[in-house]
Image (cartoon, rainbow, N blue to C red; front, side):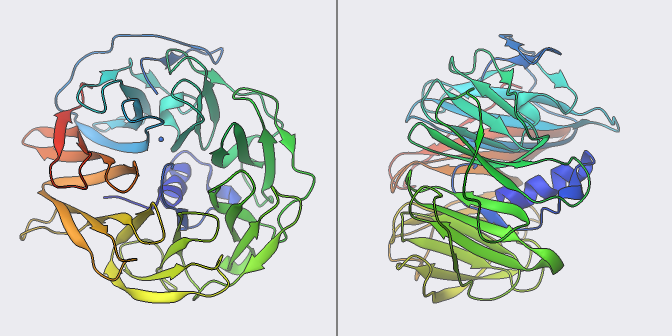
Length: 387
């Protein structure tokens, strides 16, 4: 079942013993959140590999992240456990033809691998990051990956704008320690601590950068409360903005002042009915749009957005809908509906294009299938991932 990207990261972090830094069920929409034929070696570098082709997987696996830095170039990370095994296995898949075909890396074991990270983001088709809870980078289109050397031990959300990268870092691996924002202007470069940190201190559970100057952060402060903070001058100063109501939220920034937000009230996670809000004035005021159940929004403008809704379809307990709106969320149209399918990673490629990775239940296990559209969801192409 799809989860807000950072909410899933909290579940995943807990599974590997990293829940101590206080991440909660709050997330940012869009690219995560999104690697190729590579397997990390103990030294942190990775070599290209062919991978074994497997149509069905037996165990519990998740498509952790997806990124499409170009129309044709895309990456996805898959991680999980085979059968009753307690050994984490992960790999990266890459496409160079818009999702028509994919190449899988060799499986790697353990948490400290690029494929075991919960997020991906790229500054170009060749240079990008895999992050949370670690931090890896590639400069050759995913042929090799290296572990980044940082002053922080645990990595939270990462966001890029142009060639600039911001990363949330924590000094602790376990325990309560505040998040710190770091920046670098080069993929794989040295991270510098931002001179001015956000006004609210705690765990940063959502980070959006619609431009190089504007950033939005959702911060979990003590007692489980959330704060929305923003900068319009690349972090030199910060301001607090109101959230429409308390509880978990999923945030998608379509532009410097255009924000979409799904609020889950005081419950945790998107299994609860969420209320959709939209702001066109930089979160100074919010307009309630309507209720949607388990809706994860990926906005591309103030009017156009995609959404994923994992709900029973035609009576089947596992089913997924992909929806699209062109009127600011007032009406939604289902553009893809599938049974026996959980959409686990999604990225919008503008108003007419989108890519999704879904886990499809099979008789003897499950397989991952990539779906793509370039005509606003009127038609979809799909292909089974090779690993």
